[in-house]
Image (cartoon, rainbow, N blue to C red; front, side):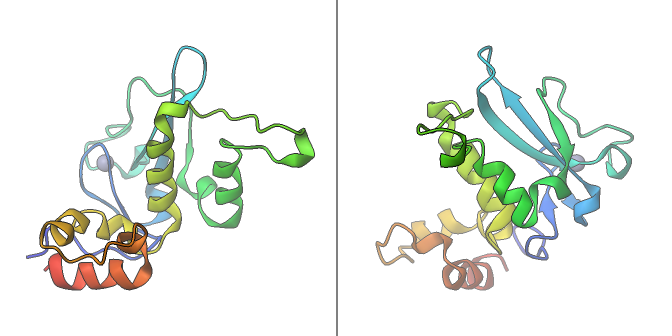
Length: 158
Ligand SMILES: [Zn+2]
């Protein structure tokens, strides 16, 4: 039995609230969390109110500071939106204006990988198993490449 259910890449996710599958993008909801200075500090992928196994709105976080349909952070325009948290771009001024708290870049990176790197959402649950088994070649990007993620899923999520 697999450690986590097998997922369709970039179409299905594991809900951060209930731990069950979000079956399709329309069933997903993206939550944003900010600190007192309005800087982003965390992100969650959860079930949309109507698709929650816990009942209407059951997977929503009470302390959320912004939210939207998951489809709004998917695809090319979704990536464009997420990148704007780091930098709006040179056309908006010479210096980057980030909305992300500098201590929470990892949370942003993790969210972007989950939403835009095929096989990461399933593979992330077994990367540490592969690394514990010494199944890495030392290259820092290795666990996140398509070749590695698909192989790790095949070998460790069984
Ligand atoms: Zn859920």
